[in-house]
Image (cartoon, rainbow, N blue to C red; front, side, top):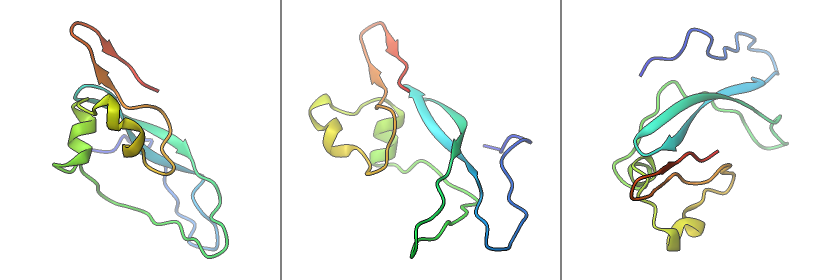
Length: 98
């Protein structure tokens, strides 16, 4: 995957933090999109880390990406700061989660 040309860039290396980040959202079974997300300023003792590359692990992240998260475990699988809901499958309908 390549980043879009308008991906957020932070060229100021002083004591500032980027205002936005590029986030990958799974929006349906095996479908994803890149979204710009607002970043809060880090609290005291926290740091903002810039990741150059990422991927989908063959474990939990692939289960989410393929929309195979069991309803009975979805609440326990949520990340602490996760927004949106897990995509899910239906026999003939694909639900878009946001």
